[in-house]
Image 1 (cartoon, one colour):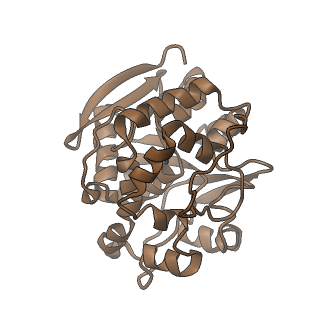
Image 2 (cartoon, helix red, strand yellow):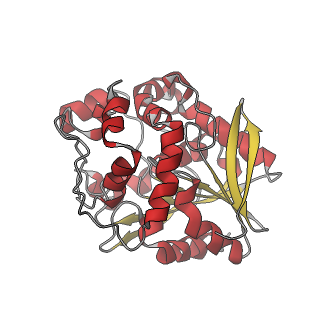
Length: 314
């Protein structure tokens, strides 16, 4: 963590906290839910040591970045707008992009809207999914995966109160350490149940958990949840991009046990030609055996190698 610098930048009408280290070509890291810039701590140090300028913001709604209250402030246009302004503020014309979870989804839309800004994209966990003109996201998920599917449950305005009952640390521990494959569900009677005896994995220390939970205690979860609550709005707004392909060089890396990868239909899409059809410049798909969702932390060195091996070609 030594040598990581922190600054606050004014971008797209909000104040954005950014962590960065190193000099050279910019590698922009985008975190997911429920994470912070901190999820990239291993990658920031490794890529800086390899001669890159590693930049990891707290996305809007998270950590030390502003968190507008309205769901309508969390569309792809707002968040990609933040990133366009961030890239400009860094004084570069384009960046290497590395993103995970919700950050990966935002990364796809950055590539879709502004491919000129992305030299190459290393995507972790969440493949591109094209907009289906007749299937609105949340009603479709309810129909196929049920009301307890986590993205459906996150639509509930009372979800923040449910999280508060358990506390930030317990909820983060549950999500970060869960290794059960398949679509995650949050039963209404005990959504974040976790045994007090559950030990932290070797890749996540109590100090790591404390840092993140302290930030969520300060900021709350509404910003992060608002990304899920804006899914249907995003579907409506992105109608003009129906059928548009992603034209950026891409490497996709996912854990074998990842909750997204093990959702019904996803492996067939990733390996059966659909993914390559929608992302014609997809160059490589890597599945890490025995790894779960948070591969940038769980398999930090492997992830660092996959990132560097790909971006050094450009």
